[in-house]
Each structure stands twice: as C-alpha cells, then as structure tokens.
Length: 210
Image (cartoon, rainbow, N blue to C red; front, top):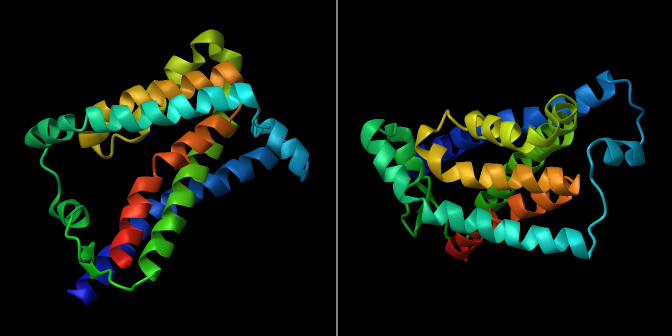
C-alpha cells in the first residue's frame, strides 16, 4: 500500500501542483513581458500586493468565513453532480478519508506528507492569486470596468471545470473573492482568505501525522 501511496501522492503533486506552479511562473514572465522592471516595489504595485489596514481586514475575515461556509454549505452538490458525471476512480482513492492514510500512504510520523501538501497549497494559492487577481484582473478592468468582478469570477470558476463536481459550490466564493478584489483594488485580502480556507485540510493531515 505504501508504494502505491507514494505513486498516488506524487501523481497528485505533479498533476495539480505543477500546473499551479506554472501559473506562478507565467505571472512573473508576463509581468516582465509588459516591460516592467525587476523591482519588488513595482511588482507589488502592479500585482496590487498592498498593505493590510483595518479596512482590508474588515473585508478579509468575512470573506474567508464566506468562502469556507459556502464551500461547506454547498458540499451536497458534489454528490449530486457526481451522480451525473462519475468521479474517476483515482480521485476517489485520493479523497479517501482513512485516518491512518493519506492517498494510501501511511501518515503516522511521516512529516514529508504535510510538507509536500504545504508546498502544493503555496503553489495553489500564490499561483492562482498572482495569475488571476494579480496579473489578469487589472487588465480586465480596463475592458470591463465595473463588471470585471462578475466576468472574472465566472472565468475563474470555469478554470476549475476540469473538476465539474466542484463547479456549483466554488461559484459563490469565486464571485465574492473577485468582488472584494475590485472593491479594495488589493490582491492581499483574497490571497489571505484563499490560504485561510485551505488551512483546515493541512491541519487535518498534521493531526494524522501526529
């Protein structure tokens, strides 16, 4: 089982983590292609990685709560859609909630698993936020102006359609995150909220390892 688990875990990191890492690298590549300088201050301004004040936190915390609540509250739609579009067997194996295993890999004392998953989360959150909210969103605002949040949110949700079982429960969060990004003209609230809702999964894995 351990050998198969290693293969499954590596497949997970390669098939999902690698494309998200590519988004991060592409965001930096296209930043330079615009002719921007190698300056951290300029990079933060272009990607709207701005300071977090009281106003920003007042939006970020409710956003994180809404992302988590909408995900949990609409989780029943996963079962509904999977009845129409069967979930591939390898994904069923990946999501097995056995307390002693993670993707068929024994977790007790195996700290490489949460480290690998943490790396995936960083690629996931930073890759998506840098590419979508950091690089694409400001360019879309030029064309779509006040409707950017709606168009962008629908596009980001469509980005996840390779997992159609998640389409409905991710939609409210996608729209909310885009709305806050436009309202505050700041990528940081979405980045923080996005990472915050991913923490429970990491904490669960750490609990299994301990």
